[in-house]
Each structure stands twice: as structure tokens, then as C-alpha cells.
Image 1 (cartoon, rainbow, N blue to C red):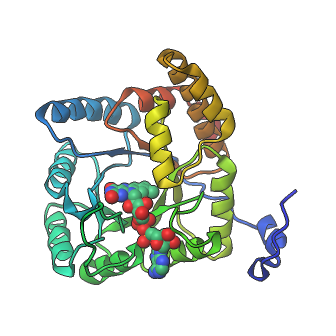
Image 2 (cartoon, rainbow, N blue to C red):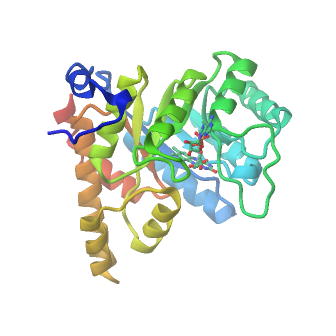
Length: 305
Ligand code: FAD
């Protein structure tokens, strides 16, 4: 039974839900996310991680994060070009907060020249203490600008929030704002991580009801450490369900048990997502190979063919 929704704009929701298309019936695609390393040791570790994961998953692409305000601009570019050289489609993240049109145009031109065909377009969050007097306010403006400047050159990914963006005034406004990015020219979306599959399924249903027909790929965060996960979830508005949180807390220093519980939870989430028709999985690797590899190896992919 669906819960009752009294919003006028949601009248007829239950009728419409019956006729929704399946999310996607094309082959499942896996993608990976890395951050640019800051040290030589970090670089070497990332190269080893890439090799392991590229061989095992044969990802559709690998994306590289971008520090808002341009703090990792050089590192992002170097990591992207290195991935591209290995024959894997590389997708730089690009955040627009605090940036000028000229600076974004220059970055786009550089990627175009280097043969990069994908981009993850974001607003980003301005680091505290830095002003935000840039030319862009929201990601939809960046997507529009990329299309104006480069036409159809880039496949544009945008961020989606099944549990809603923490700064959104309300859930429906956030959905409408997501729609702006799609209408501005996004091709597909990657979600913030979540552990509650219903949030993702509902988000997809509501996007379909708004006429949005794009792949929305779930972002998967492996669970390996409670303190970090808890801090990060607090910041980005991702919920750790109580039944998971309480167990993670109870493991205390028993990291082996915590990791094996985390693996079980995330593997089941991934399997359920694929069974429900998710078009792929995007792994937040945190530059480590093992957690992603373990989840991937535990998936029964034949079941989803
Ligand atoms: P937007 O889509 O612009 O949304 C931000 C907020 O503004 C939302 O509350 C939305 O409802 C509202 N809003 C949107 N458009 C409008 C509008 N036109 N008018 C009024 N309100 C509006 N951060 C980084 O710094 N670097 C990264 O590399 C990075 N990678 C990420 C990858 C993924 C897959 C995800 C999910 C997030 C990533 N982030 C990254 C975090 C992201 O930058 C933050 O979540 C940021 O707060 C929002 O970025 P956005 O592109 O979703 O913003």
C-alpha cells in the first residue's frame, strides 16, 4: 500500500504508477569514482586501485572528483588524463560554485582537446571562508552553459538525491530543481549514496511522472568505517538507517566484523537495485579497490540478465 499523498499536484499518482515503464532494460553498466591523490604515494596507490578495478569491472567510465572552488583542478585533470590514457572513458567532475564563465570555458576546452567525452556537472559547495561571487548559482546553469559552449560533445551526468539535498526547502522543490538540470541538457544522473532502496525507487517513479526519461544510476558507498561514514552522511544528508547504524556502533573496534556486515548490507542493496531495474551501479571507491571489488564479486550478475 502506498502512503497517502494529499498534494494536489500528486493527484492520480497511484493510477500513473501502475503504468510506469521499467527503469531501463539495457545492459547493466558499472562506473567508478576516484578523487585526485595529493601525494606521490597516493598516486601510486590509485594506479594500483585503477588497475585492479578496471580489469575486474571493465567499467563504462571512471569519474574523478573536483574540489569546489577549483582546489583540485590540476589534480583532477591529471587523474582524468591518466585514466583516459589507459583506454577507459574518463569523466571529470566540474563544479561551478565561485567559478567564472571564462574559467569554466577554459576547462571545458582543455578537456575537449584531450578527447574527453563525459563530464559530471555540479554546483559544489563553497569551502567556508571563500566568497562565492562567481557567475553560476546552481548546477542547471552549468549544464546550460556546457551545452551552449560545446553542443553535444559531452555526455553530461548530474547529481540526484533520492533522500533530497540537505539545503532543499522541501522534497517537491528539490525534485523540480532536479528537473531543471535534466531540461538544461543532462543525459544521465548519479545519485548520492543511500541505504534505503525505497528512497531510490520512489525517486525514479516521481521522475518518470514528471516526464524525465534518463538513467538514474545509484551511487554505492561501501561500508568500512562507522566514524567516517557517520560524519560524511551528516554533511551530505544521506541517512544511515537505525538498524544499520546501531549494529555499526555495536561492533566498536571489531573492524573485521564491521566490514563483513557492511559488505553483506551493500551487496544485498546492489543486488536488490539491479533486480528492481537500476541501469547500473556507480561505486564511490574512496581510491580503494577491495571494498568495491568484494561487493562486485559477491553480486550474482547472471540473475539480472
Ligand atoms: P544543484 O543541483 O545546484 O542543487 C543544490 C541545491 O540548490 C539543492 O538544494 C537544489 O534543490 C537547489 N537548487 C538547484 N537548482 C536551483 C535553482 N535553479 N533555483 C533554486 N534552487 C535550486 N562536490 C564537489 O565539491 N566535488 C565533486 O566532485 C562532487 N561530486 C559529486 C558527485 C555526485 C554523484 C554527487 C551526488 C555529489 C557530488 N558532490 C561533489 C557534492 C555536491 O557538489 C553537493 O551535494 C552540492 O551541495 C550540490 O551540488 P549539485 O550539483 O547537486 O547542486
